[in-house]
Each structure stands twice: as structure tokens, then as C-alpha cells.
Length: 363
Image (cartoon, rainbow, N blue to C red; front, side):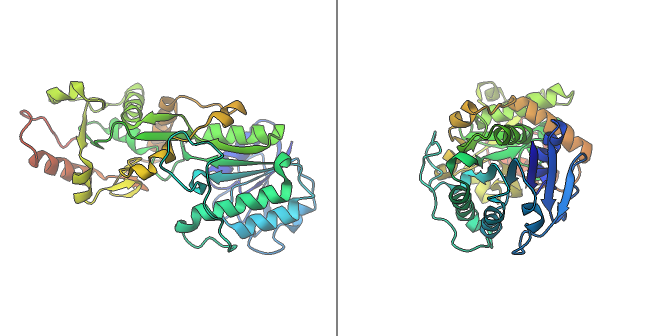
């Protein structure tokens, strides 16, 4: 397959290009090159998609398939215009943020969408969902339902995740000591490994599998996600947070041993953020209006060949990557050691004593 990847230098695009080249496909990565180098075994076509004629060189060749990860409607509209006669199939990587509601569990690809962004440029993340809706509509209108696939990805994790969302918890358990967690054991989480997504993008491009798909992992409760992270840390030969002074009530907790659950209201008072970003507890979402974001149906994608590796494997491999690139580097999500120690001390002081030495600072 002669494959054009519009991108190929950043995380998902790079992983997809590398996997396609390893499978023996002829891969060209078309990008500015400002996000990094294309993988070995691929051809690099430097271009500027913001220019009206930016894809002129790509349009002069024939491609069996195109994979596009852009979030800018103008870029996608121009790509559809210029590559419609040059490409046999178009795979557009969209997002679950296109849905009008993020509350309901089990929603499939037929759920209502946000209104599309009319402009060509997405100027801030508040417009991310509408911008992706506009991109989807451009692809489907230009290529038709049988010659394109719209892949609505959920939270992507795995090795290379610089956001910290998939790496924080296994790394935190690997450091040992008492682990501060939000007291939300049943909140859904849903993570897809970047490698599984990349392989499936290549598969549907090769097989020309048309349609709209939720490319998301299986839904697991937060407590189960944390247990997988703790087990991944233990399997890597690291501490997993257990201590001799664990509180007696912990045996009845849904969370793994070594964790200290904190109420949502208390975390808010302490300035702890949800989901990601500085001073956050990654993947935590207090507002039930957002819980459905991590509980979408992946049945259609699975029926189209999406294969998912076990969550513990993803978290273990992410832990290995985090340790390889440096555990002390700044991250896009999570608490620093000092922040967590301070929070644990304040939480212990806000409660009646549980037992001698029941809560330690542990990081």
C-alpha cells in the first residue's frame, strides 16, 4: 500500500508511520517537520498545510490511502479538495469530543454531535469538538461514505504519552509509599493504547473499511485502573505502595493497598485539578456530566478488527518508557512529590487518627 500520512512526526502520526513502514508499506509523511523527525523507513515531504497550495506536490501522486490527524477545518477542507482524485481512501482521525453530550454511558457513533465550526481555524481548545465535526463533514462530503473512515479516538495512552495521563499512576505506584487518589472508585476510565490505534488505522486504510467508529478502549472503573497500575509497577520489580502501617479499613476498600482516598470536595478545596494539568490527579472527573466520555461503545470498531491489549500491559510499557526518558522531568499531569506529601499531611490532620502511623508521606 502506498500510504500518505498528513503528519507523521508527532506522537500518533509517528507511531502510525513507523508501524506501516515496518509492515512493508510505502509511507510518505507530509508535514512541516516542526514536531519532530519522521520515522526511519519513510519518505518525508515537507509542506505547509496552511498554504492554499500546500498539498500541490502530494496531489501530483497517487495514494492508495491517506491518514489525516488535523484539527484545523481549513487544512482538512483543502486536503479533501486537492487529494480527492489522488487518493483511493481517506482515514480521518477525529475525537469523542465531537459528541453533544458526554454524560450517557454506552453511546455509539449515532449519538448527536456538536454544531460544526464554520471557520477554517480552530483558535482555542474550547472549539476543539466543533472543529473536528467540521473536519469530519468535509471528509465525508468529499470522499463519500464508502471511501472514507472517520475514527473518533478516545483518550490515547502508552509509551510516548507526554501528557502524563497514562504514565502518572504506574510511575506513582513504582515510587512506593502512600498514594493519594480521588475517592471515586466507580468512575469510568477508558484508555486506548497508541500502538493498538496505529495498527488499526493501517488496517482499515489497507482494507478500505468505510464508516464512523469510536476507537476507544474498554471501560474500567477507576479503582480497577489503579489496581492495574499497581500491578504493572509490581511486575516491573518496583514497590507498589504497600506498607506495614496500612489502615485496617483498607482491606475493605475498592482501591489497591497503599492508596489514600480523598473526598472530591476536599480535593477541590486544596486546589487539586481533575483530568490533567498541573497539580492534578489524572483521569479523575468529578462531574457526572463528563463520565460518559469514558464509557462509549467500541463495539463497531471491534467488529471492524480493532484489537486491544490488556490495560496492565499498556501501563507497564508506559512505566518503562517514563523511566527511560527520566522520572524527574516535568509532566503535563499529576502531583509533584512535594505537593502530594503536603496534601497527605493535611488530609491526615483533617481526620480523626486512624491508627498509629496509618498515613505516611510516602513519595
